[in-house]
Image (tube, rainbow, N blue to C red; front, side, top):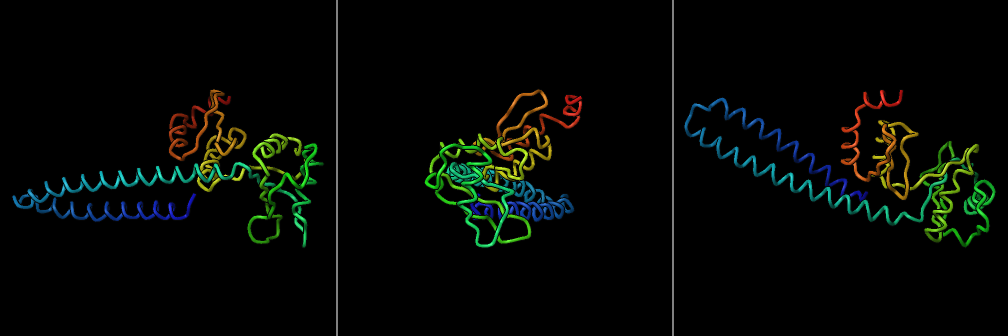
Length: 227
């Protein structure tokens, strides 16, 4: 998700917290002097003002959330040709492009793959002890889908392939796996898919959707359904 949107959401949460705290303190002071007619009138005015403030903040938060979702959808759309390759050994002065072609041809057994099919390949993040993942941009969506479907051919090796999710969707994916289990959650074209206890599948793209699904599927019901 765009960093500026995240900062805006954070600032809105801080503002809401500050307003709540200050209004709470003011209400306490009003209640201590509630016998005074003037204070009673002031309390009524404050209640009306408080209602207006919370309504305004609620509308602003809703608009920011809609903006964030729109940005997330656009960013997800821009990643349709991308895949992340994990577990490929890293060497000094390596030819990452050649390594990916070897994996696609030998490990994933995709016929006819060539350098023209890859727009770009590069490691993500700064150098560390373990091999960094390789971000691959395919020349078109069809080839990317072909590689995604062929990822099962890499089973039994150290290589795994994942979608390059936005930060927002990665957070949702992790939260879903933590609740429902790793084998019950996966992604497809940037969408998080969850296998529910009743064996039905549901797709989510926002944290709010996930929270609603979680509320409808308490842990106790999942445990009984898995027996």
